[in-house]
Image (cartoon, rainbow, N blue to C red; front, top):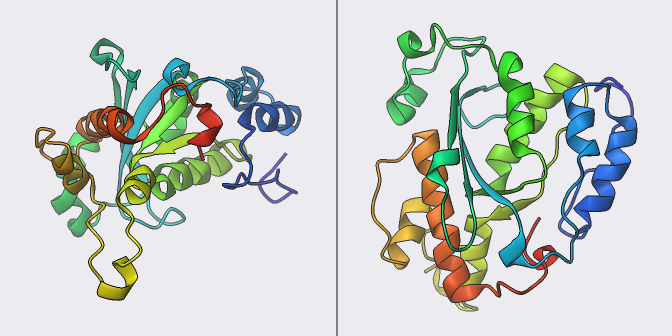
Length: 239
């Protein structure tokens, strides 16, 4: 099925049964790694948060436009609400098709020289799919990771790649929300480092995919301790 044909229904916050959606997408996905990813399934929406397999994810990209910019590095680290399994961390660099923007190099500090011997994203996407199989993904700002990987999948497989997410930015927004925000314009920062500082977490150098994945994992653990019910269904929190 090519990306120009009819695509499956896109998930929204109103749809919480990712298990059923995976079963439907497995019917239409092209043969190969993406179909196997969907065939492997997803945990049931009634799975307690504390028992849910979690995988923190972060990307570094050449910009913020998922249709025109590209993924150049990706970090993953598995976790639970009690521990972060650093031994299971994974990190990839991907050579972009176009030259890096000077502005993005200033942010992520990944240079042309570092990427010159890296594989293209299309050559490692199968491996990334395997790593994400049956995992609920922890990110800080779902719009970045989900949209960039969606665009990459459409380009490589001709079919969308979706995954359930716990978004630490959204969790923090809900935890910190006060009705007077709009009236007085005093909404707290939702940047990853600012969120971490509220929980007295250590400060790390930002904009390295694996370090930021670790940062998101630690932030989720802190948020869970203060704001989430570990016995609640994962469907109460995933998007």
